Image (cartoon, rainbow, N blue to C red):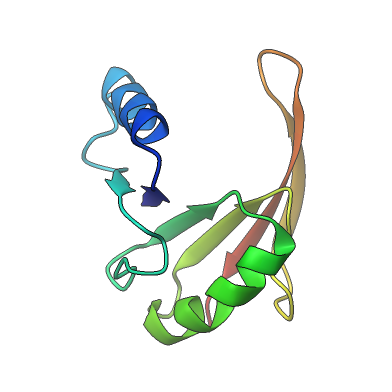
Length: 104
């Protein structure tokens, strides 16, 4: 599950999920990330600066069920210890650092 407030990025992401045939496994919600109920999610992806991740942390701690995974791209979640950190390179050569967290 992903959340995107910008219409163009939400549409682009949703179309890519459909092209990859992943509609049953992934979705992007067009909404404000501070308003979305992430409780049913098994995976939440974030691409926010550390300060925003810090603001989201209490919401994630309160609403995510045990075992839910959070993947944050490039920016850590303060006070959480990542289970795994991976560097990846996209097809166009951009490099990203992925922080994987699993809720206890």
